[in-house]
Image 1: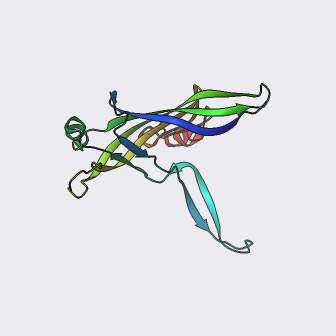
Image 2 (image 1 turned 120 degrees about the vertical axis):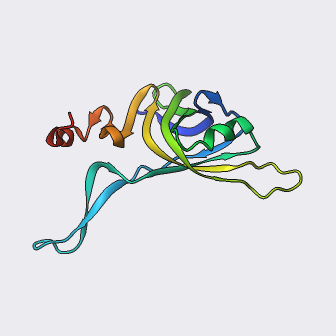
Length: 175
């Protein structure tokens, strides 16, 4: 029977294996398919046709609740993509057992930091810098099962284990 997700109970972020528990929050990128507007004879209007597996840029934000000099040293280095590992615990209801269950959710990204912004400095401040990043790799797992993997440089877009770009790679001689 299908379990119903209820709530993201808690989450933690790791940057290159460094624990950022209690240090801020992350705004995850949107996964947006590239679409092409199409109109032709025999079509009674304009339609958007997706290019399966081709995605728009994956941009997100990492916001700190305080200043962490070690994190700043790492994140300001735009010459190297950082591994962002987001781990959460989702509590869901299982109607078959009548119980609440917790399952892990994990999103691993490789991302380049593209912008760092400091808040206004003021007394008794509980706010740190905010970084905008551009992810070049995304892997999303729910309860240990990979749901989505996106790797534009390797020309990979896998949904539930099915690679939507396998034929495109073969056609381009990339396999």
